[in-house]
Image (tube, rainbow, N blue to C red):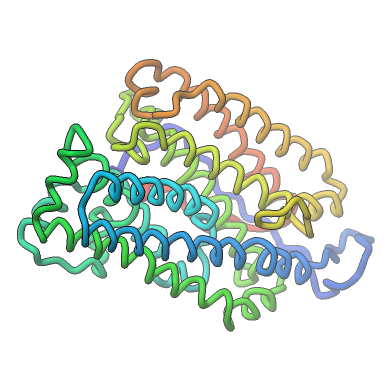
Length: 366
């Protein structure tokens, strides 16, 4: 995403962390925070994050398999099958994009998989030359799901036109390399959660900036503010500049995918707040329970109520955010305003209640 000056700036607040030496206790007496952070971290890791990545890994493997099938036999039938899997995988990516910690943070996982808008001219130049290195940070805007979106939807007016492009080996090679890289990076991150990193994460129970709860809470709120609010809605709507910018829409080349991605991202953040298990109706220890433990059930209710308002407003949006921006951008700006209200509840009110310091600076991202 382009670097854009902010109109809305939230001041970072620093709070003194409460002691959590007695994490296993069941009371909150004398102002001492005795909430069981270890149990909450275990729920996050075992019932939400690890299962989400494991599920996503299965979809990226299918994506690579169908990409290979298409490159071996470019046909409209194989293109449609691959495109359907691309859309399914992109929606599933929204269930893991928030978890930018551990191996995902180390690999710049989210940036490699979903930096948009795509640098289309650079992609075409690399395809023409047949020479590129997708491992370089300078290639964030030339790969991942935005690249697949272009390569499967943006190369021609019709499916026949798109298939014709794949008579060239360079197009086949680039498409397959992009798909393989999505899968290989996902494999690395998934393996870390199925392996030793799970225990490292769960054992970080300290109430400090280095503890897992504090670190991930910063990641959670940054994802919501920067990638969900600003990335999916704010930048294309021109919320910071006053000028709508359709090219900044996620899934720009797809006809009806951007709203699905947005709704899944909202669901993921809301479910995580509630401690909801991945792909299950069960719930465990969570931000909601933490706030209730601290006698701030009123704030938990306000946060959930605002999620409900955001979801209700989203019903009015076009399936294609590109079309929405071009035909009635007012609804996008309304969506941004509702998302912003949740930022205040999470970034100011919730972190104050939990005595967690925000240590990131909201920036334009990529």
